[in-house]
Image 1 (cartoon, rainbow, N blue to C red):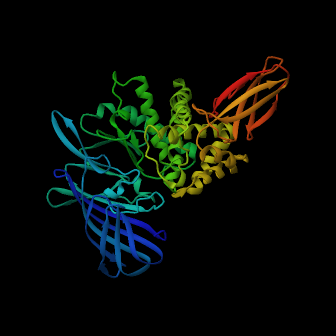
Image 2: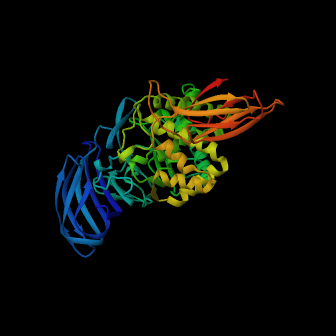
Image 3: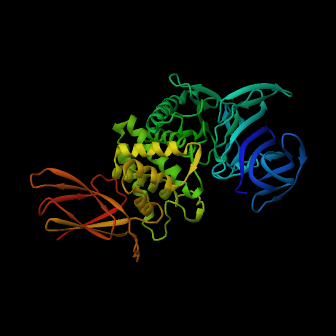
Length: 526
């Protein structure tokens, strides 16, 4: 099945907001490099009514079967097919209460409850809403149409192309075609939403439910700023015509980076005067920035497998703080990064049983309180360490090179390392392998002997370990010279122990002086 590639999903959905069910119709355009007689799609909690094959000349019914354990829909083709052809599927589904797939929520206004329906597909829940190749590597373009009650609003990844009245006081909402993207980024929602545009950048909008309008201004303004920063830093314009920030009452995650339609838990987008604390305000700005970075890291360039999830989340974590610091330097965001990101990662990674940033074997680990400090916090800290090692300009150059090489495509860890190495001409690949592919982190011991500083490394854990792991560690050192001036040095500790020449005997020094290293330090004085 690796030789079968999705090209275009054409999805028509008709949700019943009273019964919380929906009718669906999918035309999936495929290209096969070799002759195939079966198509396997991911499906979960959908009732498949019919499948047919279309080659733009004829339409032929296909037999099909479901394997609920593997969540695979097996479609038998009437003949072997090669090249471009279409599979058409009629199906029904439920608008569930699981906050996954196509799910229902509600809001209350003046004592009355109003339903909404919204999607959440990461990592593999698009299959709850339409049959698909539910894997990040299987990118395609999407044409989405929704038939909804005419008093409701529908939102998807792209702008509305047309709205057509249909029977029973309903309208068909047709959205413009999406860019090429993965299934987990597809989005739509239905409800009594209103939209407000930023006055300076009308691409940025906040979607809110009745009664929320007084609280949207801060999020709308900072969304505009975050978008401007990302476009400038990454050197690639945001490729969609609009970017909606959507406040959702019931949402399992803090926010989700659906391309062009970011969803937020209400308290992470809406600002309530005299209620939202300073910390809450900073958190809103950081989450908006995090999701904005995802529009490039994850959406434009997608990990080719879930084992590379850190390429999404580590960058979004890093830039979530970087964008906020750019606009609010007085908030001392990078100091907060050390306490809220680096320190929790050091605490979690010091256990004997931990995981590497790059999940081994292609297995996707569920993001929870055990794994998030590694994928998000440690990953973001390692990016900060890389920036300290290669410098601000080369880091920015490497980011741009990576995004430009793999835009609208998928990438793996090595692709990022090679971009940084090309930008900086430093041994980033070998260094990053030691940080991304192996668990844990080092403690660097420093011992001064005459005019030398002896640096050595070993793995740090709370309990004794017998590890022989070695990292390539960029160690920043500040040394106070005999004339009482500070001199900055950087050493790549790439072996078990290394001697560093100091400017004179009894020099005063500070290890990890820039606080960019992901390590612990222990200093001896001989």
